[in-house]
Image (cartoon, rainbow, N blue to C red):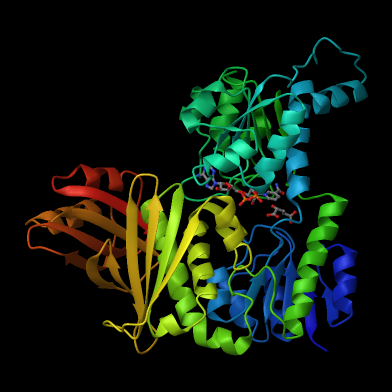
Length: 526
Ligand SMILES: NC(=O)c1ccc[n+]([C@@H]2O[C@H](COP(=O)([O-])OP(=O)(O)OC[C@H]3O[C@@H](n4cnc5c(N)ncnc54)[C@H](O)[C@@H]3O)[C@@H](O)[C@H]2O)c1
Ligand SMILES: O=C(O)CC[C@@H](O)C(=O)O
C-alpha cells in the first residue's frame, strides 16, 4: 500500500478518503528535522499552511509522487523543485472561497460595530454603550482590491447590504466588472473615495506593501482597511503608525508578514485594530471541502490517474505528458513573458504552433501558454485545469494557428498578446537537447535561455547604450549573468535581454528608462 504523510491538521473526511487506498500517518507536530528524516518513506505529503516543503524536503522525498495543499496558497511549497523532480503539486483553489469572503465581511462588521472591544469591555464588568457607538455600512463605498473569486463574493454580499462597490483589478475585463455591478476604478480613486477597503489579491513583488505610509495618507480619516489576503501586502508598521495618529479609522488583519505573529508594532495599537490568527479558511465547511478536494486528487495520482487541480503538471496520460512536457514548459514560459511585457488587461492571445508542433494536439500547449499568461495575475490559483476558464472570464480571446513549415527549429511557438493599446510578441523553440530558447521578442531576433530574473530594454541601436545600462546596474550592485542584443536594422531599434542574479532593487528601472536612447525597460521574473 502507498504511504501518505499528513503533516498539518486536516479534516477527518480527507483522512478517511485516503485511508481507502493508502496507509495514512497523521504527524501534525513534526519538527523540520523529523520531516526530513521520515519523508523518504512516503509516496504523498498532505499539508496546510504550517509545513514548509523546502527544496531539501523535496529532494529527500525520493518516493514522493504528489504534494497536496489543503487550501489555495502554495507559498510554503518549493514548486519549481517539485516540478523538476516530476512531483505533482495540487491545491484546492475554490474550497475556502466562501469562508475567506465571509471572514472579510465579519471583520468589516466587527470594525463598524466594535464587537470584539465591546465584548471585552462588558466581560471586564463595564456597561459602556456610548463608547461603542458604531457606523453603518449601508450606502458606504467599499473598495475591493482584487476582484477574483473571494473579491467577487464579497462584492455580492456587500451589495446586498446596500454598499456601493469600487473595484481595482488590472487583469479583469470591464464586462466582468459590469456583470458584478462593480465600478472599475484606478487605485488612487479607490484609496481616496472608499469608506472600507478590503484586499483580495495575491502577494507579489508589485503588491508587497501596497498599503504603506504614502497610500494610507491618501485615505479618508474615516476609512477602514481589511486584509484577509496575504501578509506583507500591508506595511504593518506604517499601519500601526496611521492608526495611532488617527489618520484612518480602523483596520482588521487576518494575515501577517511573519506568521505566527509574535512581536509586532501592531500590538501597540490599543483601539480600532482587530487581529485574527489566519482564520480566513477556518470554517468546518471549508476544511471539509479542501480536505476532500485534495485527498481525492492524492488518491487519483496514487492510482495512476491525472490530478484535476495540479498547480505544476497538467492532467495528461503519462506517455503524452512525457513527449509534450518540454513544449508545455516552453509555452508556459513564453506565456508568462508575453503577459509581463503586455502588462495589465489582455484582449487576445494568438498561439501559433510551428514546424513539427503543427502536427500535435494544440489544446495542452494553448492551455500551458494561458497558464503562463495568467500567472503574473493569479499566481498559484491558475493551473492547467482552470487556465482556459479564467482566461474566458477575463474576456481573453484565443486565436490558434498552425504552420507546418520548418524554419530554424524543428518545432517552435509564437505568442502574440494584444493589450488595450499595443501588441507584444515572443517566439521560442527547443534545441536538440530540449533546452528552451527565446528566439525573438517583438520580432527582434535573439537566442536567450530563459532565466528567473531578466531585464529587457527596448532602445535605439547607438554607441554607449550597453555601457550605460551596465554602469547603472553596477551602481545598484546588480550582477549580470549574460547579455544579448537583437536588432532588425543597424542604428534602428533594438532589444537587449540581460539575465541577472537577483530581482532589481527599486529605482533601477526608472533610472534606466530616463537614460537617452532607451524607449522602455522591463523587469521580468519567470
Ligand atoms: N485568509 C485566508 O485564510 C485566505 C483563504 C483563502 C485565500 N486567501 C488569499 O486571498 C487572496 C484572493 O484569493 P482568490 O481565491 O480570490 O484568488 P483569485 O485568483 O480568484 O483572485 C485574485 C484577484 O487578484 C487580482 N490581482 C492580481 N494582481 C493584482 C494587483 N496588482 N492589483 C489588484 N488585483 C490584482 C487578479 O486579477 C484576481 O482577479 C489570495 O491572496 C489568497 O491567497 C486567504
Ligand atoms: O488555513 C489555511 O490552511 C490557510 C488558508 C489560506 O490562506 C489558503 O491559502 O488557502
